[in-house]
Length: 265
Length: 253
Image (cartoon, rainbow over all chains, first blue to last red; front, side):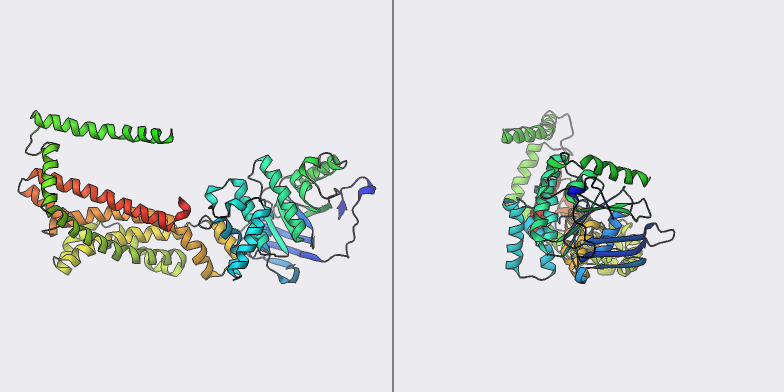
């Protein structure tokens, strides 16, 4: 692991063995079924530290989503090993509009709890609290089609946090949002993550978003995807997108990631 | 502001139909057209009123309504059930699809003689005609509805730990509902055509028989009364179906 920091004074302490990993992937390969099936991932190694916000950055079609789908139990691996802390089921925010149109906002947030057969009262309490944190308290009884795109993505994020899973998988949850909304929801997401102390594995193709959110960033190669390099983000928390460019190390960090992505071509 | 706008649009839409009826009225009163075949709208309105008052029209409506609704339910309920089953379970799809496709392309009304031979003239035969037509339309709409449920929603449910049973109940069924309802409305339109044409040929009561008999005895005002009644009947039933749809699928506004 390398660090992006150019000034040692703000280097975060790196203690590789002091923390448990929430996700460990080793030598993973995934080939989609069928004759001439696409080899999406090959020789993928990844360690995600428990409690960290870990971004995966890479060109489109590099297998980032495939990795999350595999960890979410939707795709089978064809080689290698992987594990998630305590053998737990990760929560998942899929790419695109994933809110169930036939459930109200509150029922959407509570969906995972309903699957786990949590008592109704608990479903309600948890959903209400999350909706309040996400600024959606007044929309609990609305249906997704009555909400803006940004609100719907917040509902999907709330649904993932509701199950209190140790690991959250997020697949470009904010990529369809306009800039203002995206920055706003990023703030809410970081706040929820800080409160819940869960591990987030966050797929994005946006360097600035990765730098604004993550503790570490793993850059993926082109297909078949694997991690080229994992870098530490040297900015202190709490951070915000607004202050990102004022960070002394921002230009160097951006350029380094940019070059790594360029190399994948 | 909003109201006046929608009012203006409604009025705009009424210009053509009202204009055409007026033109017809003028043409009939000036004998530009043969009033034996094309009686004036005012005469048709008179006749409709007469037939309403003496209860004859209502009786025919009731008879047709009963056949239509029983046939519709007998066709739609298994249509939905088997269509969904075929859309969800590949083996059932393989089993039903070839036969259903073959039967689907047969023009339903062409089966009337066969049905009459098999079941003899009577309400069971008429109801069967409706049910048979409705079944295939609803079957195919339910099948493709289940197949076209958004993959993301299915994946989301599975990622949250939903088993097959829960995926079916919490995603496939509600996700199919809007397309199934579109299919039901199409099926109802076809059912109306089938029951009226069946009554033309094989019934002495019901709205179809009423129209056909009026035609045969050259009672053209009554024939138009029957046509108007069938039209209003169809519109009301379509509204009723829409009302059911709004209650069953509230998330669609």
